[in-house]
Length: 315
Image (cartoon, rainbow, N blue to C red; front, side):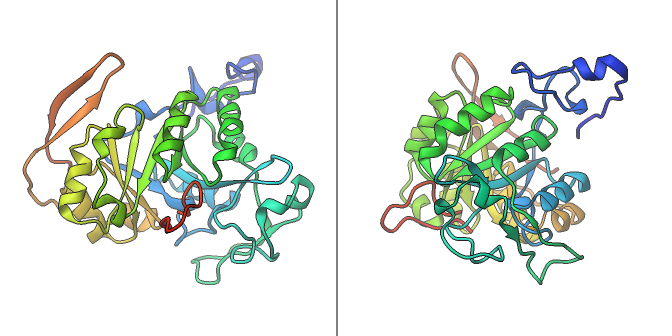
């Protein structure tokens, strides 16, 4: 939960991020960071795509104001002029009134793209302009943890610059399906998240990634033993995607995951966790100096980053 502090006069105007950007009032002494996350984390996948228009500013605002998730997720792509934009698909066809490849547009073209809300969504939603990554970072940076999936590894250095300039290196997770991209993001001083499909998890050795992955993002459809291997890998946080039901959530939490990435954060927040006993799970936790072993008790409380033959699709 973000504590909102009322500031008046020159005090509010003087509160600025290290880069000089005017900081949101909610920052107080600094932005909300990964260290403030609860033990069990809910992430609104694309803003909560079963409840709001995906990857839209209105949807992200609704998810933030409802307070049903501690992390907002969105997807990023790069235009031909280097502008970073918020969009999941390679094409405009599914979620907008336009058609064609996203990468062929420039910034001026992008400002003319209107998102088309899905008819199945609850409530009433209007068409709206598709946002850029800068707009989302400036709107939510420091107020809530953000997770962005870098669809194109060419964008990584520019993403890093946007995040560093706003003082958000501990407030934004950069997600990818590629360990190599995760390693690059780590070297750029970013928080890294690596997602894996149930097929990949059958042969993964996730302990190899613990030196540079902050969140391991696993497929909830994976086998119990594959989820257990991820939980015991030494990666500090293990969250499961893409969860849509309470039963799916309760299973992955019971197996030791400490977060879920969900299209329905409102539904899950209203549905209590079914408290089933399980044996304690041994986890390795990273500290700045070394690795320590500790035992955690029971927790009660995407298109890949680059296209390779046969690469999985995260949905």
